[in-house]
Image 1 (cartoon, rainbow, N blue to C red):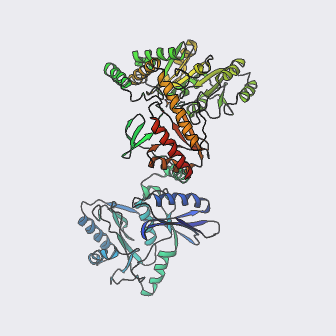
Image 2: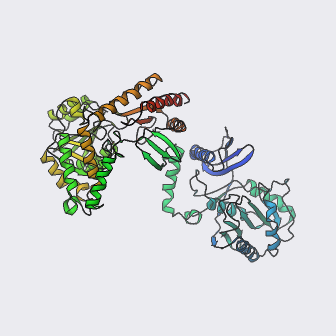
Image 3: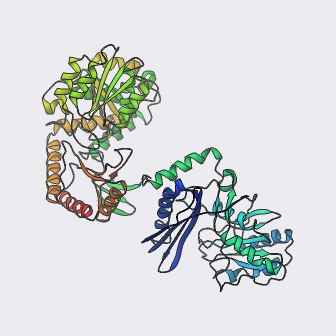
Length: 637
Ligand SMILES: *Cc1c(COP(=O)(O)O)cnc(C)c1O
C-alpha cells in the first residue's frame, strides 16, 4: 500500500522521501530534493526502487513530498580511496585518519562502533570525553533532508554517491569533526571515515561480505549547550551538496543528461529489460529457470530450430567458414549468397533478388537508394521502424499517409507530380496489428500515378497465401516493384532481401549503401534460409497448419470475450495503458505463458498491447490454455 502525503508548497524545491518496510522492518529509504516539476517522476522512480528491493517486496511504502524551505548549499568533501586487504587493516586505516584529524582516542571510539548496530541513526559522541550526546532513547541522530545538486537516477541506489552527500552534510554541521560509517548492506563492505582535515576517505573493507551489521558515529567537539543546535541542523536543515559528477559517481559530467533521460524512461514505465533465454525449443523458452510457452517469436513455422535448417547452416560453415570477409562487391560473394538470391527470386516470382544481412538493412538500403534529395516517399503511418529510418536517411521528402487509407494515398500523390521519383512504401502485414495491405488497390493507385511501389513482407512470407508466397499469392494479383522481406521470421534464419525486376535489383547492387559498405551476410544464414525455403516449397501443409492454429487461438479468445482481428499469425490484444499491459504480461508469465507487452515507442502511447505470435508448433491444448489465461489476466486488470 502507498500512503501519499503532499504538503502544498511554494514554488521551488521540495523534499521527496520514500520509506518502505515489511512487517514493521525497514526495507529501504531514500530522499531527493527536487523542483515541483520533477515530483511526480521522482515519486514513481522511488516507488519502483522500493518495490524492487533485493530485501523483498515491502508491505508498506510511504512517499512524501514537502516544501524544502530554507536550502543551504555546501561543497562535497574531497574523496580519497584507500584499498585495504583485510578488515583489520581497514580499521587501522580508519583510526589513522581520525588521529590525523586530532582525535586522540581513536582506538576506543572504533571499539564502541558495535554499539551503533542497533540504532536507526548515528551515535553522537564527544570526540574527547567519549560521552554519548544523543539522547533520543536509542534511536540515534538521523542525518536527513539532503541531496546532491546533480543526483544519479532515483530508481537506482548508489551507495557511494548517497554516502558522500550524507557525509558532506554531516561535516558541514556546527561542531562535527568526524564521521565513521559502515553500511548494513551485506554486499557492500566499503566504509568510510570523513573528517574536516582529510575529507571523505573510502576504505575498501570494513567488514566481511554477508555481514549485515552497519552503523555510524558522529564526533562532536564543542560546548555542551550547542549540541541541540547541531542535532537540529543534522535532522532538519535542508542541504544541497554541490557534487561534481566526477566525484560522486565516477561518471563524467557529459553523461548527466543521459542518466536523466534513463530516469525519465523508468518513471514512465517504459524501461525495457533484456531477458536472457537460457534454452528454447521453438515454442518453449526457459527464462529465469522457468519454462514458458512462448508467443514471442516470429519464427512462425518453427524452422529456426529445425534440424534440417540447422544442418544446412552447419554444412555451409564447414565448407566456407564463418565470416564472409568482405563486402559483396569485393570478395564477399560466396555460392550460398548467389543461391539464396536465385531461390528467393523464384519463390517470390521476381526476375532477381538481392540479399542483405538483416531486414532492417534491406529497408534502409532500398529506400535510400531509390529515393534521395528531390524525391518523395509516401509511407503508411504504421510502417515498421526500419522503413521510417530508410525514409529519414534517404533525404527525400516524406509524406506519411493514414494507415491503410488508399484514398488518402491517392489524394496525396496528386500533389507531387513534379518530383523526379515517387516511392510508395507499406508493410504487407503490419507487425504490431497483424492487419494486411489491400495489395490490388495499392498497386492500382501506384501505377496510375507512375510511382514506385514497395511492400515489406517480413510477416507475410511463409504465412500469407496458400503456399506462404505472400500477398500477391493471397490476392492473386501482380507484385510491387520492390518486394522486400526478411529471412529472419518465418524462414527462421537471419537476413533481408529485395526481389523484383533485374533492372531494379541491379540498381540496388550499385546504390544500396548497406549492401556496398557492410560485410556480406554470413553463409550460415544464407544456407539456412535456402533450406527453409525448400521445406516451405515442399510442404504447403506447414502454412495450412499455422493458419489453423491462428483460428483456434482467435476463437478461444472470443470465448473469453476478447475480440481480435488478424489476417496473419500476429494476434494483437489491446490493453491501452503501458503499466497495465506490463501487469497482464507478468501475470501470464506466472501462469506459464510468455506473451510480451508492446509499448511506446513501438506502438503509440496509450495503445500498449500484448502481441501474441502464433506458431506452427503450438499444440492445441497450449493455445486454448493460453487464451484462457489471457482472459483471466485481462479481467484482473
Ligand atoms: C522485423 C521486421 C523488419 C526487420 O527485419 P530484421 O531481419 O529483423 O532486421 C523489417 N520490417 C518489418 C515489418 C519487420 O517486422
